[in-house]
Image (cartoon, rainbow, N blue to C red; front, side):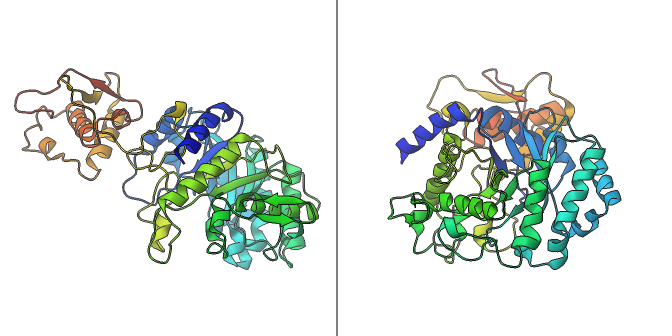
Length: 443
């Protein structure tokens, strides 16, 4: 397994310049780093070139300004009916897009999430009109480079069968999917799907097939293609259903795919080993550019799910554990997502040395960033900032820089003294000069 993912790391470095790998950045948690820290980390340390948000959070959009990372924003399902009105759509663009683009490189507006899965007729019937209104609003605002799409769950097919026979659901094929695909063809935007083998009703019987592990495969006698993994089967099923409606030339994007690392007794397949196998092989397949049996050499813009675990997410326990990175930005597991083959699955304790290192702010760091670093470090579990509280040994001098330096160093020391634990969005630096002063020791 280790050798496989060393190979993945090499492939990632070769192919990510041309093949898009993105990540879903959910924020339903109370322990995540500030968006500015996340943006800098993604830009400087990972191979991700794009992020997908589940809203249009202005703080996050500001944080990604001038990073070169493309951003997709999402409109909630409940907002779909109102956005069929072009005046409302233009106002939405003016409020949520114009203040940020192009400094923040907004690439897609995702209208709703898995709307058909909701079974809400008001959302379903108004999805295409809302997409058209937003496309019109973007053109009026001069944003022809921003595309409109919507991510679909895979409850969209008639039944589970071989890829060559797959079709969209009866009753929705002509009334729902044909207009959507026509819109994508006309606007040159991708049809976005969320393939999740983890949620397959056959997962118990076909676990190895879902995880890219050795299995007997599925043979499609009509195309004479053999499928050795569920991911390829899902993608070719999507293509076949689109082609049957006359839209096989529309691009396909993957809005979400991933595998959870843990859950309760009702989620026996949510394990670290399975997450490594599925996510590692999907990433390898995407960056290789080899495509699928029916779409050879075709690339798919892909957003892995997800960047972080989300400890405040409602629902079953498994919903909280889809993340690939810890809040301190170390990988939960290694599937080659750090640049230059870097990997740090856990913060390592450095070997004993006669020279002691400290983490302090760089000299040109703004007060805004110092405050952000202070708030972030002191907000993490296990970080003791009581010495810089009133009456504490390190409260004086009562300056933002002094307090931030203490907090950053405490975080650095607690988190294993790694490079990443002194990054702070590029504003921290490791030094051998002891910043302690009378009555206050930087341990």
